[in-house]
Length: 308
Image (tube, rainbow, N blue to C red; front, side):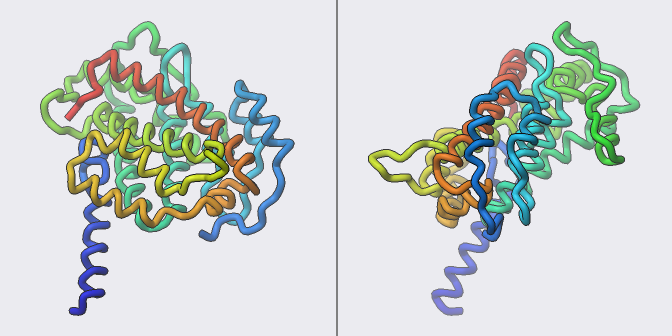
C-alpha cells in the first residue's frame, strides 16, 4: 500500500472513531443546498424586531429554502415551542429541534455527519423511554411541572404519535427528571441509558452548536470574516472539548478542517450576505439560549451536570 493510500486509510479510521466517540463524556457511546438565493431583507427585519414571535409567526416571516432538507424556519418553530410554564422544556419540540439540527450537521458534509448519527442515537433513546413509560406509573411532579394533555396541534399520524409520547412522565424535562429519580434509574456513579444522562449529552452538544452559530453570526473584525472552520473549532474548544479525551479532541480537529466556507451557509439559510445571515442566526441563537438555560437550571437543581 502506497503512502497516500495509507494516509487515506488512516484518516477514514480516525473519522469513524470520531463518529463513535465524538461526545466522550458527552455523546460518548460511541453543498448543494438552495441554489437560487433570494432577498429576505424586509422579512429578516421583521424577524429581528419580533423576538416574542411564536412558531407560526416565525414560519410566516421566514420562507423555507427550496431544494434542501434543513429548514431554518422549522428549526425556529420547534425551538420556540419548547419552553413551557416558568422553567420547563417540552421534550417533543426539544427533540424535534434536534431533528432539524441533525439535518443542519448532515448538510455540512460526511465528516460532521458522522457526529449527527451519535446525536440521533441519543434522541432515539429518549423517545423510546417515552413510549415505554406510557403505560407506567405517573411521576410525583413538583409544583412547577404540569401534566399536558396535548403536546401538538399539527395534523397527521406522525405528529399525533409524537404528541402522545409526551403526555405522560416524559412530556417535559422536569417531568422526566422527576420520574427517573422516583424510579431510581439515574445512576450518579456509573454510565446508564437513563433519559437524564442522555439529555445531559444532548445539552452539552447544544451549547457547542449555540456558540458556533453565535460566532458565525458575528460581524467582520477589521473588515475580515473568519472561516467557519476556525469558529467551529473555537466553539468546540470552549465547550465539548472539556468533556473529551485527548484522542477525541484530535479527531475533532480533523473534522473541522473539512468545514464548508461561509458562502455555503448563505445558501443553507437562503440569504445573500453576512448581514442577513446574522439576523437569522441571532434569532436561532436566542431561541436555543432559552431552551439551554431552562435545561441547565433543571439539571443543576437536581445535581445532574456531571452524570457519568
